[in-house]
Amino acid sequence: MSASRHRHRVEQAEAGLRLDRFLALRHPEVSRSRLASLVKDGAVQIDGEVCRKPSESVCPAMTIEVSVPDKIDEQLQPEAIALEVIHEDDDLLVLIKPAGLVVHPGAGVREGTLAA
Image 1 (cartoon, rainbow, N blue to C red):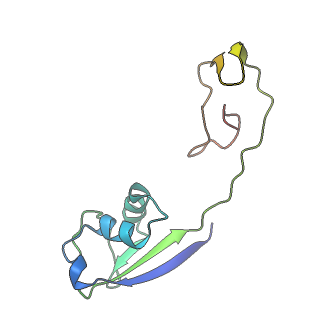
Image 2 (image 1 turned 180 degrees about the horizontal axis):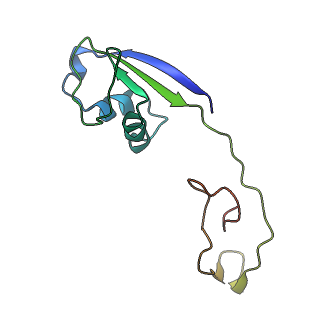
Image 3 (image 1 turned 135 degrees about the vertical axis):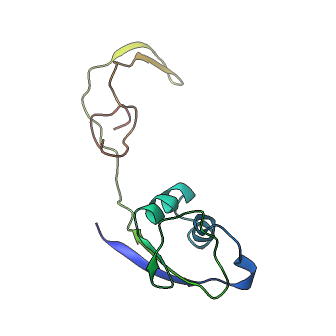
């Protein structure tokens, strides 16, 4: 997976912010929890040193570099899954969801879900 590398300089007004909060302000397209995971995974450097602590406070003039994985454009594709439909009309669908059927794609599960 490819990633985009970003370099930021901490401004005086940002001093004291948590690292994950600082990154969330600079990257509003990425969730704060995802950014915290990137920090823990070693994808963030402060002044050239890897930082794995999302709660680290930033200071003015720090240089922060982060590698943000490129977003994967995923379109849900319909799949033929046998479901027991109890009721269906224009506004509502009631079904029996079998145990173990994942509702929507997530980490490690891309297909065979109710939403896909």
